[in-house]
Length: 178
Image (cartoon, rainbow, N blue to C red; front, side, top):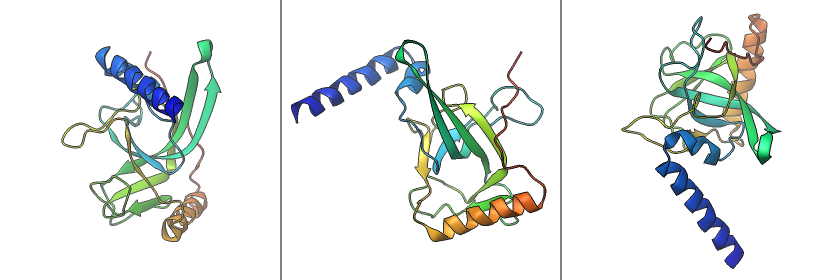
């Protein structure tokens, strides 16, 4: 009823205020991601500390929340690396999601690597809406359908392949910049 409308109006005012103060504060207002979400991530590059130079699709595999100072909530996510390169020949631990798959927000066929998972703070240092022509706020592109048996089968197969190939499917904390 009226309380719900007031709450939504307050949320909208909070978001507008944050936008006026600069996009840097937007992370505070992003909805918490869920496993299966596909997000835009500045995925860390090999041997380079800190966030990567560009946004790329990443698959959220796990979400943890922690209470912080002054009632703030810290969200930590595990994300699997995504790329549109080499989708015709996925390696052990990788699976392909076709761009035409509904609800994913992918513009190209994309493979996700369950042997390359990082544990990152869900903030605007690591995650950001994609650049034009496909800007999005928040950084969520879409999600995999949790009821899709074909996707479930692909994920289980990729996990089994990764383990058989001796690849870890545990999340790694990236090196931070000095």
